[in-house]
Image (cartoon, rainbow, N blue to C red; front, side, top):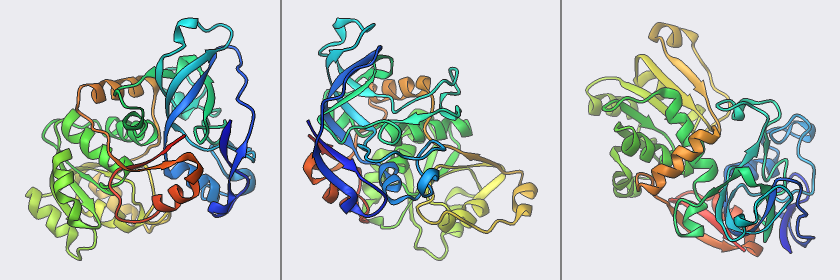
Length: 344
């Protein structure tokens, strides 16, 4: 089969188109013919060594073992089953839960042995992938491409919303709202939980699109009076912030939060380190959460919300599998709205 392998840390030239054997199946696994694979920051940061270098990169302490086929937002069709799997799974159209772990229900994402497809396992930048049958779910939409945008970004956003326990009518600020996790945060907070959502983006050209997704107000982080604009629009401080930006908006986030407010972060595209005055935290009684991915139960709940039309698929552009370098390069450009999807 054709596959894209990352052969080491570096730029997109570390992505190579190769011919490799179709994966063999272990007990309990199925072979999925990949129909679409969404692109995430995770596989780009893995290639670039952004999680660390050598044995510090990847999701496990031992690091990524190269060569590795990246890709974790996978949809496809089951074409073969391993031992212990019923033949009735053949032909099933599936979306893959993105990691394995020994964690008990509700704690799968924080188990020490959490292992990610596309990092610890070969992933979806390929024509076929092997994966445990128990982690293959029915696609939420008829389209393979539309269904391939939710896995990592959607699950991460769903868990972020669960962390802060949104109540209907609360005002939630969502940073990076035109990106993958951010756009899902807007939809989940507004359409699933009934929150009043303030979306923050760079370019206000996407204002109408974000309001269609559920945002009531849209602000530009380029404004020098952003905090004042948010406080004025809300008539006072907000209840919570869902952040994927990090340093660039951290001070603003703490400034606009109410006493007893909640701050949840799952990304740091705007800076991985920041200055923090601890007095701001304890004097305002702010609760902070770190968040990434989520549980299998949350994944199922998200799929049901998608089926119910509460969360929409947003696709910016599709690329053929062989153009993975171009796709990852395009992914890092500003001005996109929605996901980038590879199609074998």
